[in-house]
Length: 277
Image (cartoon, rainbow, N blue to C red; front, side):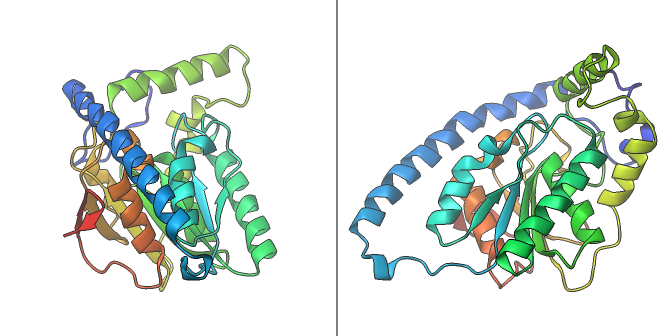
């Protein structure tokens, strides 16, 4: 997809696509994956040595994890696993691949929230990666009766069009396949028409008072303009991570875990190697 394919309103003034070389920063995801593997191995041994009665108390509010563009539920499996070990009850969004119409995905997410809320008898906390966070924000603003709070990770809610050229080419391929007759994939209307406008408007809807909102972002993000991820309505939390690596970086998981607790993050903090400075 060329820049002409995407509607200009998706990249408001003040935001821009990351440079071509910016994607090189995504190479750190290898290190981030390694840190997760080491931490997961150590945590597994620690759990074996911990008496059942001393393990974390179950958090009452359920947590729904929403994957990013081109990704599915499995991309957030490492985060889900860690959060479960910390006492959270996590749920999948039932998205095999986030490649379709954003409005349809938002409706599916709302139905999933209704299902979980009814089953657990409480509102749900939502964690969304990239596009998943944008979807979560739109649904939460519209249905605060279902959502207790959200955490976005690298979600360019302020400028969805401010993404790397490599991602743009992926979108272009989906649009071309849709034109060729493969329904269920993102259509041109989703990036340049009324569907895109409505989705963008939903992601910027007024935020309900009293609803928790934490926006995790990284200046090292090589896929989207990090400035677009800092929603004025959210508590911003800065991490040192690649865009893709946010799904499993232990430092990001720590930030998400803290944001899901009753005490919200009240200011910008920097998270690195699983610690908050």
